[in-house]
Length: 80
Image (cartoon, rainbow, N blue to C red; front, side, top):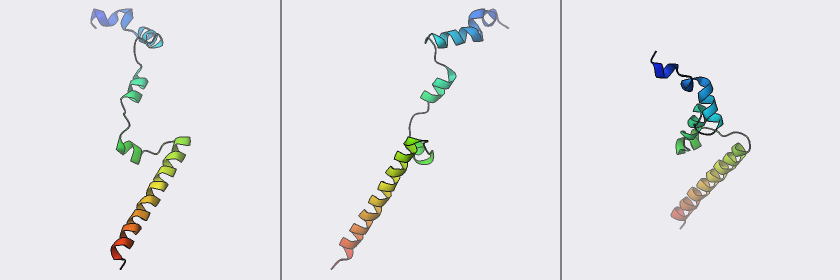
């Protein structure tokens, strides 16, 4: 093992101290930041709690709006 890896500043306690002091980002925080919100995540991953209710209402309104628009276009096209 190289000498620089055996020094105490490369141990877990040093890493934890840097994270605690805000000088380094933790792996969990990095994973949370590195997963940006994409369209596929909005569609395929259901949110939890209050956000789930808002997501469900949004999809419901979007569905009703789409159906009414299709029916409106259909009625306008085939009305004499």
